[in-house]
Image: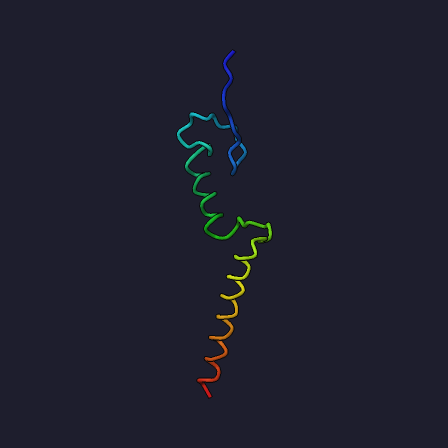
Length: 77
């Protein structure tokens, strides 16, 4: 008996065969809906960042942004 590789469409949950043209989606419509969710920020990575080097870099960027906004208010005076 042949076993078919299947998956459910991430958008509408319809069963999709692995050989389908739009795999892993059931149609181009579902593919575009999924892309729209990514583009609008509907999907996010919710796990915290645990890499100390990356955290230091992000804090440096944040501090630089606050310093530049502070300078702008002094220039206006």
